Structures are given as structure tokens and as C-alpha cells.
Length: 506
Image (cartoon, rainbow, N blue to C red):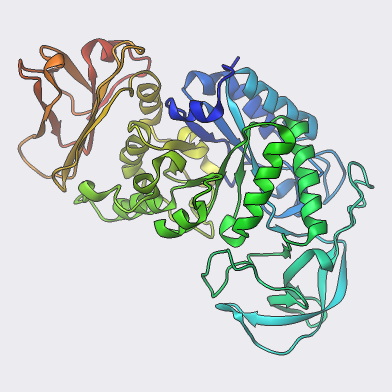
């Protein structure tokens, strides 16, 4: 069983999140069962939380990854959109998976998508103004009648749990006029864009489908009612919020406060604000800091570095990131379901660089790292191979990456950091060296002053260069050899001998 401690306290104690899915999992309705079966193994590997995919019925039914939201109240229980289960399984299997993960000591994060709806049962004739795709503030014509997919009655559910009917009053905009068979962005008459959203395309309130009017009081009441029901029914520990750059900041400040009050729980929350501009992320966090955010700028640092070749500026690899600006409210990641091949936001980090990127998020003190399911296990459907070094890096984080962090980012192509270890974790501490001098004939080395308290210790390279242990001299200094490896990780000799995972050396 997991310890009954603050979730945020767990985040700060080497917490590690798993994104427990990828985009192209088979539509076999078996994933909740897979996660339940994996639960003990995930805990053993050092994960402390699992972000599960959206659990409710999407417009594509059993084939929907979960982001084409149809009915929030159907967790795989009703015959709607062509199936009873979702892509991942049934309502009962979802509850069982949440319980199994929690029983293994893991916290569970639910993926929440409140921005839009798709799959309406009927159209409604409404007045709407078509706006420019690249400037949503520019009206292309006067308001005119259109037929919009805006009436949701959920006949398969038949009013179970809730009998609210969604109609055009509940939405701001749609992307298709059925009457004139025309795609576009159509702002419904009497509606307006929220200002506290991203300003890409003039105003990026609209993303897709029927855009939910978050500030309509009837709609807001529905979302509070559903959120309270969902969180209490499932017992999840927190949420991941989708597409928040398109959603009013004031809405989420209000909704999250209401959810925390209604449930009486802390509800850790991480939002997906897809922007490489750290300033925009900091603005969304604001003074309230009601949530954490994914470090998209750091992901793009990894992406560009992996495409820049071997001569990488490691000295500034963390500069300008959310991790640098606000590490307490940062969830770091290398890749995810949106960045993987063939996705709209494709920006996949090259495989050769992933061990370095994962070392940078797993073995440092700052940030809350999230590991991608496909990187951990390798998924042919996603054209992603497992990162062979990940189990070893996870073990090092879980057992040894503790203590004060000492950075040596003093050369653009050769940097290092030291985790000094602590008394609570036996033989803890690690030294990590990154080098882009791989074409040198002579072995690359980095001299680091560990401190006099480390004099006489022997440190063994467990990932990178295959060599004899390094001995710390009487002044507390040691020369850590990198060889031609871009990444080298050292542990105390006794710690290296105790590893469950086999060291990886070139």
C-alpha cells in the first residue's frame, strides 16, 4: 500500500510519473487490464504515479484515443458510438485498474478534456459568423444561418447519472456548416472568445469540434456536477488537463478550487499548455499556481539537440525552460502521445539522444519527470523502440539520486552534476557527465571536486565508458573519464555492485 502522505510531498521525494499509454495502442479494450496487471512492476521500477488516458466515451467509440470527447458520463458502460467499452475497456475495468495501481502504492492521474465535444445526435440552425483561421478576431462576413452539430442527447445512456441536454447555447463555435457543406471556424451569434487564452491566431480559444462555452453558468454547473461525480466515483488522486492554452485561465482557477472543495482532497494537477515560450507558461501559472505545467520548452530543447548532431551546447540545454524558471511547478518529459510520429504536434526526439534526455530529467533534483509508455516498453504500432537505458536510469533515480546537487555546467560541450547522497539512502549519490566531444582521439575527462568527505572513495561507471573505478584523492577531487560516450553515470563502487539492472557500457 502507498504511504498516506501529501501527494505534493511525494512529488518532491524523487517522484516519477508514467504516461501510461500511447496514441496507437490496439483498440482491443484491454488496456485497463494491462495497467492493473502492470501495477506491481511499475511500483518496483520506481514509479510513484500513473497518468491514465481519458476514460470516457469518444466520438469514434472503441477506436477513440479519448480526445474526441462525446459523453463524459459514459466510462465504458453504455452502448454508444458503436460500442459499450471504450478503447481501453469498461467502467468496471477502469475502477479495477485505478484500485490496482493505488493498491501497489501508486497515485493515479485522470486525463480530463473539457474543451470540446464531437458526435452530436442532431444539428441546429443558428446564426454564426465565419472568422479567419489565422486571425480568429477577424470576421470574414456578416452573421448568417448555418446548421451546426450542437445537440447532444446521449440516447444510449438514457439519462442515467444526468439528463442534461447540450444544445447550441452551451457552445461558442463549431468547425462545420452542414447546410452549406463548408468547413471553417464559425463563431455562434451572441458568443465571444475568452481573452485569457493563448493569442496564437489572434485568439486561440477555438481548437476543434463544438467549442464548450466555459463561462455559461448552466455549462459551468454541469462541469462541476460531473467533476465532483467523476472524482468521487473513481477515487483518482489528481488530473491531467488537456489543451489548456485554448481554455480560459479564470475558468480553471474556479473549477479546480470547486473540485478541491467538493472532494476535500489535494488533487494534484498538471496542465498541457503547448507552447515553447516559457513566458507564456509562467503567465498561465500566475501568482496562484493552481497547477503544474508540462515543460514543453525543455522538450523542444531535446528535440532540436537530437537533430543538431553531436556538437551540442550542453551548457545551456536547460536555459530558458520552465524547469529553470519554476522547478516546483514543472513536469518534465522527453516525448508523449502528441509528439510521437504521425501526430499533429510531431516532434519526436531522436532515439540516439533519448538516454541523455532521460538522464537530464530523471537524475537531477529539480522537476517532476514523466516517462512515456512507448519509450519504456517499445511499441511497434507507434514506430517507437524501447529506450534500453531507461530501466537502469529509473533504478538509479529510485535508489541513488539523492542529496544536494552540485552543477558543473562550465564548458559548452562538457558538463556534469553531482548528487551528494544522503543518510537515509544507503550508498546514495551519483555523478553524471555529458559530453559532445565524441570525435576526440583521447578519452574525454572531467575533473570534479566532490569534497573532502568523499576522499578515498571509489566510483564506478555504470552507464557509458567501460573502465576501472575512479578513486577520489585526499582533497576530494576525482577525474571522471567519459571516453567516447555522450552520457556517463557513476555510482559508488558498492552501489554499482548492488544494481538489479546490468550496467550499460560502450
